[in-house]
Image (cartoon, rainbow, N blue to C red; front, side, top):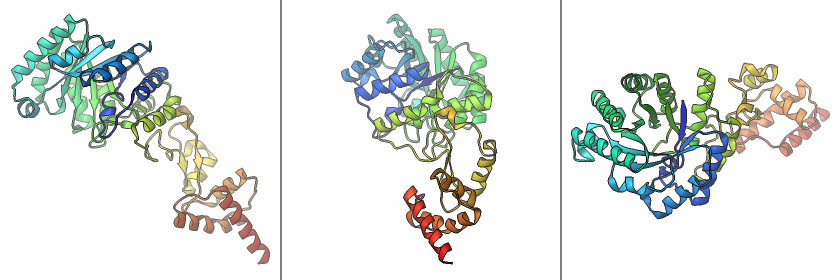
Length: 374
């Protein structure tokens, strides 16, 4: 099972996102060094500058295999010549709605187009993946003809694109399993997150027999984005004991790199890489963590270069307060902690943030003064 990360292609297609050359090169290096085995790095038909960046990445000698993307058109195919990529993904609509209303063609035209363009790409010395745009809305029987045609023409891979993110995991499993049973080709899943199911559908596709899956860092991509790299890798590890060879400790730095380059901040509660996903406030959770991490730890945050963080707020309990003050070198009794707790809760409600060390010291002095006077 191979991760083919498409941050530098579909990720950059996020509305308003545009990477410059230095950013694309930095992201490519970071992904390759983390162990990502394959990545899609651009669209040659966009122009000379795009092709120059693609050639620059190809010239780095990265360990990752490189793919470029194009439409199933002669001009797109020719633009890929000399870019230095290992494989080209040629995309074509395969659902009736897109065949008729986007291309104004029919199914037979699509099959002929696949045969001729794959053959031409092979003549030009390229390895080929056929991208089935809107495959999730295609007639399943016609999709088998598409895959059969692609394989007969010499393509090595078929990309099943849930272009509008409409599938559920059960249907995804069935669709991919059917294609895998009918073909010896590599089957690649390309999931979008319009219904919040991209990661689930990607994992289901793997269970169904997909040999490759597409991801993006932080889940960037068209509309709601694609399956996030960090979620797919960690899901495989902890749900199915499948290792991808990717260094998960690199996720925080890669996430930050892509966030800066894309101008898209990572939501605080974003799984794996969000700033708050290993932060704990609720008293019952903190008490459980302090007793034994396994009480509220699904996996060790150290696996992804993170650590637990206990924060104080409206829902904190006395154990959290004692722990926070101990880190400041102040040892509280249970009674002192309960006396300070109302100030902490008021601060969280008024200021919408956890109190800092200066605030905690002030609360302690004020509370101690009141207790002394009392």
